[in-house]
Image 1 (tube, protein in one colour):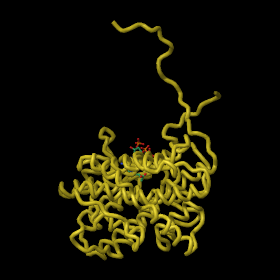
Image 2: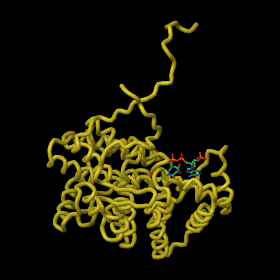
Image 3: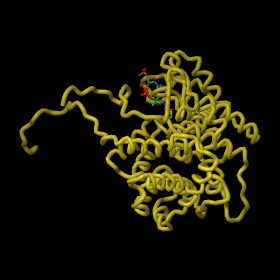
Image 4: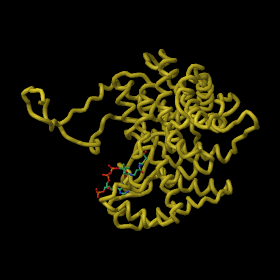
Length: 389
Ligand code: CMC
C-alpha cells in the first residue's frame, strides 16, 4: 500500500545496488569493477574480464589458469541435448534455439543450478561459462547441417569459439590470431552493462530463486529483441538494404525522422548514453583495423560511416542525443570474420554471459527480495456478471 510511482520502462528507477559496473551516460564512461572499458579492452582478455566481473577482482595468473581449467571441465554437453537440437527445424533462429537449449540444461544439471555455498556457486559459474559457449555454437552448426564440434582442451576459450563454429571434419582449421584478438575485444565490450533489459530479466527471474540456467535462458530471450541485442542483426540488415538500394542514406535518414513511420535508425540511440557510447568508439576503431588487416574491402563499412556522419550532423538526432551505440559497428566486424547475420545476437549473448552470471550471483549474495513491481490499475470498475447474449 502507499503511493505507487509510475515509471514505465523504469527510466528513473533503480532496482538494486550493485558493485559491478559503473556507467555515466552524460560523460560516456563505462567501468567494470572500477577499471575503464578502454583499459580492459586493450590490456585484458575475455576470461580475465569474466573473472573480474563475477568475482570482483582481477585474477592472478594462477587463478586465471585454474578458472580456465575449471571451465574446461564442464564443456561436455549431455548427448541427449543433441536430440533436442535435432527437434528444431534448420531454419529456426539461433537465439530461439539458444534460449531453449539453455533452459534444457536445467534438466541435465539439476544440482548445480541452485547454489547453497561458495563451492556450488563456483561450480555453477564454471558450468555455465563452459556449456553455454558450446551450445551457442551448436545453434549455428545445426542451422548449417554440419556435425557438432567439441571443445578442444589445448586451446583458449575464444579460440575454441572459432573452432566450435567453423572446424570441418574434412579440413584442418586454425583461426587467425587477428580474428581471435578482435573477438576477445568484442566480447569484453559486451560483457556487462549494469541493469539493461536482459540483465534485469536475469536478476528478476533469479529473484524468485530460479536457478542460473533458467535465469540465463530468460536473459537470452530478453536480449533477442531488436531494441536490445537484436539490434546488431537489424543494423546489418539495414545497411545491406541501403547498399542494395544504391546507398541512398538520405532516404533512410528521412524515414527515421518521420514520426508517421515506425522505422528507427538501427544502432542509434541509447537509454543511458546521452553524449556517446564509449563501446561504439572502441568498436569503430577495431572495425577499421580488422577490415584493413584481413584485407576486406566492405562497401557496408562505407555506408555505415556515411550514415553516421549524416546523423551526427542532423538536428533531429542531435536534439535527441542519438549517437551510434555498441551495435552499430560490431556487425561489420562479425561479418568480416565470417559470422552469419542471424548469429550476431548469439555473439552478444556469449559476450554478455559473464555479466549475467555476475549480476545473478550478486543478487543472490545480497539476498535481494523477489522482484515484484506494482501497477496503477486503469481497467473496469466492479461489474455485474451477466453472460453476453
Ligand atoms: N531512430 C530514430 N529516432 C529515434 C531512435 C532511432 N534509432 N532512437 C530514439 N529515437 C527518438 C524517438 O522516436 C523519440 O523521439 P520523440 O521524442 O520525438 O518521441 C526519442 O528519440 C527518444 O527515444 P525513446 O524511444 O524514448 O528512447 P528510449 O530510451 O526508450 O530508447 C533505444 C532507447 C535504444 C531503445 C532507442 O534509441 C532505439 O530504439 N534505438 C534503435 C535500436 C538500437 O539500436 N538498440 C540497441 C541499443 S544499445 C545495445 C543494447 O541495448 O543491446
